[in-house]
Figure 1 (cartoon, rainbow, N blue to C red):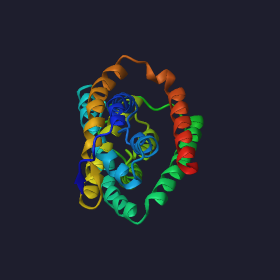
Figure 2: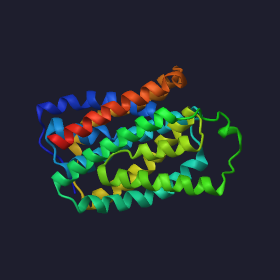
Figure 3: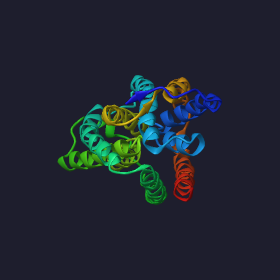
Length: 265
């Protein structure tokens, strides 16, 4: 169901929130959808089911603009997009069904637990992460059978998370791309494009059986589009390979805090 909620003065903060999330998300290969449900639930008092569906709708323009920017800079591996994306579509549709099986409190708690697990995984992977091979892009487009299976598994997981929690589902996608030894810039651009596919699929399901608040979407999108447009440009000027580990640590810490707040509030 699509509807417009009554305007509230607090909604004037949403474009700024969207700008910050859009900028950061397009620079780390995420759709930013992880932050939207949390912000809508905790700071704006939106119910979990509405927050999930609305987050997906607000994330869509961000993904489109960010993906176009990365495509222009050659940061997208087309074959990997298809491998992760096809599996992600199936996962996203399944995730929508999972969401409908939980009430508001259960969905909120599940999102909190997922956040804690995600933070732990990022911390552990960051400690043992090996340097990615810089020549995946130049090895040709032929991928081994094992890589196809691995990519599909990660893509399916990303889709399920996207459909269930209204987040980008980028964590499994990023992990899968790193496991395939993709260069960091290609990891970011390819991940964002896969997230776009997952978001479209999950949003289609939620529009049919969920609740999308277009008032919130319009306010968030006003900022996310601008942020997503400048993210790839800023990324191109940064030497992120040197600070990648620190960025991941801070990202994991923020996710950990978000998860604890959701569980204990």
